[in-house]
Length: 368
Image 1 (cartoon, one colour):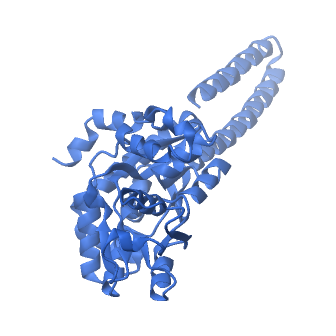
Image 2: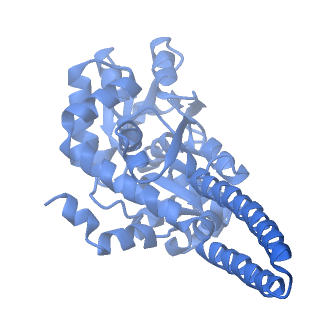
């Protein structure tokens, strides 16, 4: 932008000098007329330049507008909500529209079509899309590197063997809740495709409604959905997070092309994310108000437990997307996607943006 301005102004200046030299060879009246015409012409050119530069500046400003999705109404998305509602995106030069799109596969389709620039997604959705041909997709941050989910069931179900033949709800086929259910079932030697029925319900409220109506025997929830189910008399069959599985669950992804074209903008997003993480951990009252607004639950016990789990128990200060978290995804996909066996985690991750911010000391300084 600066080079364009400099070259253009030099052109105007050179043009004026040439005109002046020609004018010195004429009569004094002609010179006055010539100077007037010359200055008038230069004024027109400069006016045009100002309009052009203004348009370019507006275009640059507009280029920092981002559409970002989040895949569920749960505490796992609180960091993104806080970045928006506390003005953190704005403070870092971004104009962000948050869009709720239930389930990772749908947001992935929107990313590939260009409707979204960054998506909140389960790492499994992005890795699967990449293995299926969307090679340009990449994970740039991970806020939760484990399965923060609970399998909730009817109160009379207490042994894994009793789950055979039962019907369970997930947000969507291929979603993170779906993956969690299938991972748990396999650990109990149950085949997710033959031993149970899995129904995509769209969201956690729909899963809970299905359980209340007797259409489902259980479902997978993240806080505070599990607490809502407990309050209605359902049982927490297992807390998947307590199993200590390292897994890239709550992630943010984009395309390598977008990073190449607008690296500074993506860097602003990562910086906003780290500030929001700090704010989530340090501003409990403000965070609870925002969670209440999005989750639409005013129960203080529910909000307090959601805060404990997502702000204090599992959330790292630096949201690195880890190779081990992606390796767990690849291992889980080997039976359905043979390409996963040969794939290396590094092919799905770009750690450079978080790394640059971390090495600068920015993240550590926030906690001093």
